[in-house]
Image (cartoon, rainbow, N blue to C red):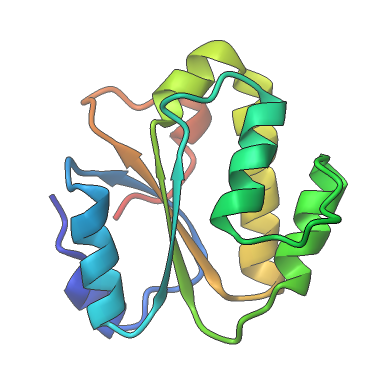
Length: 143
């Protein structure tokens, strides 16, 4: 497991990263808070499709009630919700969603990557607990 505190203290750059770790979400939340950053948990271990993923994002990112539950609305809402503070997004349970809806994972990763370059706030950690990395994630840098 990579200890996040040194990475956050040194100013982890915006981006989407593969993170081999079995750390519990509460431990990650604590490390992120100690570094003075905001934390968002996206746990897709019970999510099967795009609709479920967008509902999860609406709750996790505290998006407005009028959030349109489509990809364009997610991209717009993420860029509009600028908190001014760097945020660490822990995406756990990705393998489950990937088994059920590969396209949703693919598009979500694209949106997160675009937002990290546009707003410079998001650091998305895709938590992997298995030794094997899905092909879709192999191009992502690893922490």
